[in-house]
Image (spheres, rainbow, N blue to C red):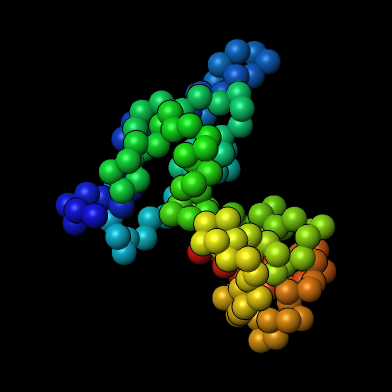
Length: 165
């Protein structure tokens, strides 16, 4: 990877949503650059487009949404990327940690399964027994077997973060 190429470069990102009253601009002209090691925070009022920006960056916009502009990750254009390419990239090279862990975790599935899912999909691991330790569980075995809806909030937050790593 060329050191001059930013990790993420977003230029004039626009997202349009189809609504019952016609097209609506969800984002207009979002631009920023991230280099390796940078931290970027998206700050704004409710409804200002923070979540839509994040969803666009990981290819999870609603079906009725259309992205335009440019999003380049490690020099690769993401706008218009086909879903199979997104599936290879998402969770392996780029991820989003959602603000509310219970929206990121499925309460019907065990925490260990959800943490290990990206490791199985992207790293070829057949089992991810130690994955819960990545989220700070003192007893990986106990956390692994619990369902997301029955774990303390701090564990859910850590599990959501670990599953994005």
